[in-house]
Image (cartoon, rainbow, N blue to C red; front, side):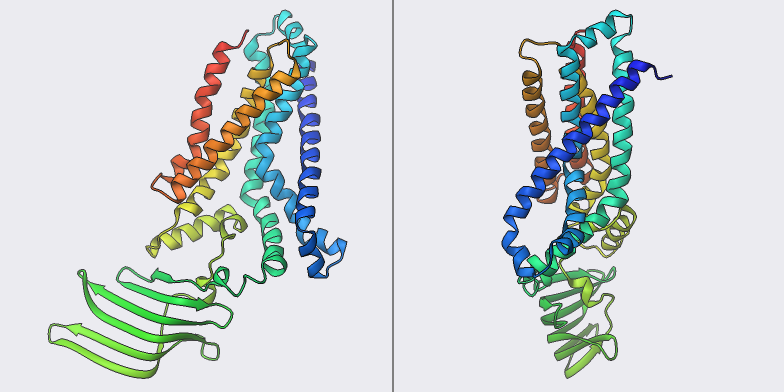
Length: 363
């Protein structure tokens, strides 16, 4: 059962967290608005339109991005204040054990971790969708007709035996060049279809090829046919060829899992980015609890430098955590590090650090 001292600590925790969150939000909005002033002017939108179409999504994005740091800094700040006023010494002098005192932080950290876990799975993707839609429509609109809109080489596996390639597909006009389709059987090519161009036939809701060369290979030999135009059935639509760099941020977790499973069933590569995002939505919530306990242990000791020393130590720990997180993500998306391990490496490392600091803490 929670006692008066527990409620005192939790109240300090919540108030300081909200203060840190609002302070950093104001700073983030000020910096972002100064960088995008020219872009906002070019849109021709009013202040309220920019707030409702962009910042209503940008602010939650900042919260989700820096949420663990908000919690960590809040814990370090108010716990350091308690230590400088000898409140922690007084608490322990009443017979309260160090673990009992730390339990309050565990409860508070668990609450904030659960909030982030639900938000990362459902709320933040909606906010990111608002922010990213504004970014694509108004700020990156000049790039929309370029590579970001799908004018890239695509290589897809449509089933267990069929592979399709398209070069320079433009989702605006729904046309592409240099199309090929290969069908394999027992690792041998039995069918090849090539075309100079491919386009989406809006009237018939299907794909149409132009400048087609068809090759059929069997035991009797090779048969080649040529067509000016030829309809072809493919398992994807023009929108599926769009390279959406914001896709992983815009999908809630259930939809993200479905996309990963679909892409995996088609044998498509480059899934590490999506998988890391999936696992990070859970690991980042656990990191909130971990950083809460580390912050409490680090700042509970009364030092000559006071809050300044504790904040300096806390900032170093926070920067180290971010570096580990970024490095592990890059090694997974650009290398061969398993996504699950990449998402959890920072927590594993700092769990060991937390145990070391806990054992060294005066109790």
